[in-house]
Length: 260
Image (cartoon, rainbow, N blue to C red):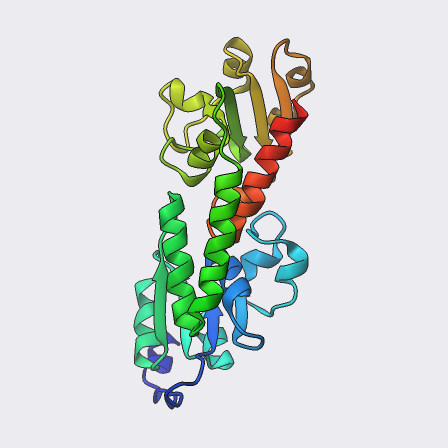
């Protein structure tokens, strides 16, 4: 099917000066484009953003947009000027979009504030509204500045689905550090995606457990009974993306700190 589509004649190019229509296939670009694109410009977002377990934006906002599963056939039916995807877009899909005359823009994983601000500017420029991008950049920078914590850090376990932990170079680790939470797992030499069983947490407890899943191990009743350890939940939708997600993640961390 991809070969057949790739042989199709490419769509006519938009007139110079027209704002390009966009389809997003990545939940992180979904969240940014929802903020910087003009009404009607964002034709569809990824199906992940309608999934409570995978979205990086509020569901009520995501549901204002149509979704796509990301197949070439679905995208072609929407007839966008540009497709925005993650860096792991399958080569066959990339080749088909190229042959069909659909511009492909890719974004990587933001692991720093600077990475995220660069992505905002990249996608805002793509939509033709750099000013909207700068406004979002201003909001993110303001949230970052206001959330800075200068006191002693609190040893914190960010515990994700499957019992894994984030790496010290991840964006969520940097947000924790900035907000006054020291990554408990990193201090014990655990890298991105390392598994931390309940027994290890009980044997060497942190000052705070942030549970980013409601699975059984992460919500075990014994966690609420540990002396000297606070327990709070953390929305997993705030873990992986930059852009406006940073604002929500920092707000939640500030809320957690105020509650302890």
